[in-house]
Image (cartoon, rainbow, N blue to C red):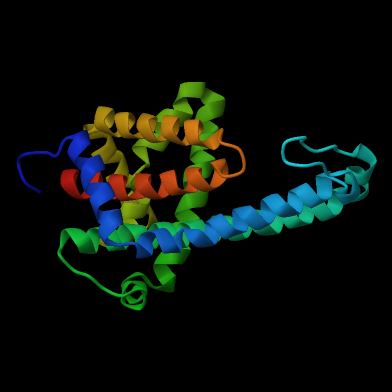
Length: 231
C-alpha cells in the first residue's frame, strides 16, 4: 500500500472507469436483474387478476380474494426467486471483486479464467459469511438502531478478504473490522452515498429495483478499491 491514500472522489471515479473497461461485470449482474424481473411479473400475476388490469396510465385493480386464493403460490415463487437472486448476487459480487482486483494489477482475464481464480470453495465461504454478516447486522439493529449501520460498516470488506486474499471466515471478519475501524469515516461516506443513490433510484417506477442492483454493483467495485488501497 502506498503512503498516499486515495480520496473518495478518486475511488468513485476509478470504480466507474473499471466498470466501463470491464463490461462483463455488468453482464454478471444481469442474472439477478432478470430474476428480479421474473419475480416482479410473477408477483403482479398473483396480486392482479388479468381481466381487470388497466393500462399503465390507469394503474391496477387488486382483487383481495384472488390474491388470498394464491397466497401459497406467491410465497413459493417469492422464496425461490429470492434465494436464487441472493445466490447469483453473491456470485456476481465475487466476480466483480476479482475483476476489480485484476484490473488494478493490469490483468485482463476471461470470465472462465476469473472463475478458476475464485472457485466453488470461495463461493461457499462467501455464502456462509453473508449469512453471518446478516445475522450480526440484525442483532446490531435490535441492540441499537444505529448499531446495524456500525456493524455493516465494520464488516464491509468481508467478501474482499475472501476473494482477494483467500482468507477464511474468522480471518476475513477480523481483517474487515480492523481496516474499516481505521478508515471508518471514509467507509461511512461511501455507504451513505450508495444508500442515498439506491434509495433515490429505487423510487423510479418499474426499473427502480434494477437500478438499485446496478448501484450495488458500483458499490462492490468501489469498496474493493478502498480495501486494496487501505489494507
